[in-house]
Length: 62
Image (cartoon, rainbow, N blue to C red; front, side, top):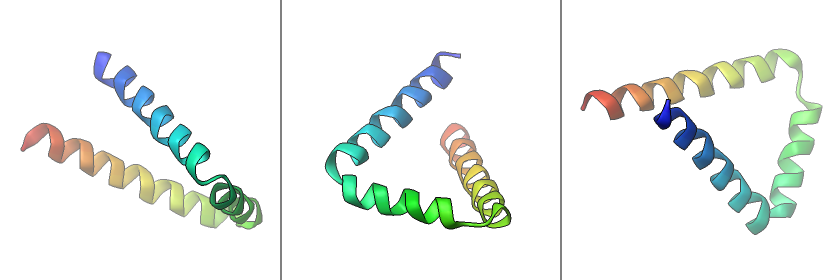
């Protein structure tokens, strides 16, 4: 559970840095998301989830 909380904190940290350092870029990407179809968002979300799972798997087992 401690690892999960640390991971969530790290996500907030990284996102906060991106919003602070590149606000115009983030605003443009948010606009891109708002214009995306639901199907595309689902595919991107599933790919991101699988990539994250693979990263965690390899980090824990090697």
